[in-house]
Length: 336
Length: 98
Image (cartoon, rainbow over the protein chains, first blue to last red):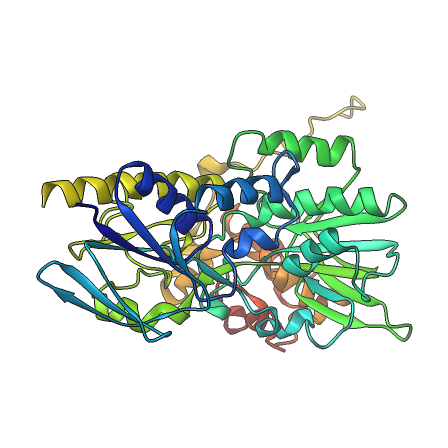
């Protein structure tokens, strides 16, 4: 008999986990709160490090899940454990039973207005990394008006006790360099600067991207955190940072400032998470069972986790976890 | 007798003989000084730094590299405005040392 597996979240992790579970002979059911599958990655234009079209990856994922039962615009409003597994009540009034639950609920983007000193929502020319990605897709954004000087700020809402996020958000460094190169392609005359503290190029091909950024795109990386943004009489942005390698405070006038926002735990799942007895880790993400051998397992029997609900992750990390969670669930269901 | 030449002193930081007494004393009352990630926010926002060489980040380094006299000279520039404490991502309470 085929067993239902309840997958909460239809982003990269949820879709890939469902695909693999179906291949393993189980019956995944995806519950997605928004009106489409794809999650954050569907809002992205190109992927680091090699500028692949996000669309190509996502459309393959869509194709893989086309036969999988999916609820859109639907949230789990209540979930209870019973003798056979779990009983979930959905916001559309239906209820489903499953042998196991996979939490693939992903992340929320850090709300840039919380770092008030960067002026997002106050100054017109301060935008977020997500908004820039949307510009790359649509080539429409009133705020991006042939900028001559562009700055990128790393670690917005990450590595910052003041906003309560001490962790590194992992992907923003590489994303910043990728977006900086793309900006040079769109506006070849523009000067592009990134303000970083450490450039964490952790994956294969990422250092090559860094080299390309310097060699082919002439993007200038300045080691220092932007601490203040203001506006001058002409409505241009004036930023302050220390050039820590040169050892002097620095001021610069820019036409556009892009904030590399961190990932935060998606809090809309908190109630269900509590009902399932899953705690948060010290970074506010979901706690998995073990950092090494139980990454996609939780301390609660039959509840599994995958993707960015446990920590900031890149797309390859997330896909890897989604595949791993499928194996975990398969073993769990078969040994029960 | 002047032979017209002299030996130049080494420009190295002599880590083997660095005196960390002051830094360690500071660390006891303010463990934050160990958590600096050298982002430079304090220096960038510093009111005194607009006109002088004042840089809190560098003062912490000077104390850890045996340049206590330089640190003492620099710290006199502090105007106690506290902006460095506001912007520090590690919640260092710098202004208290000045």
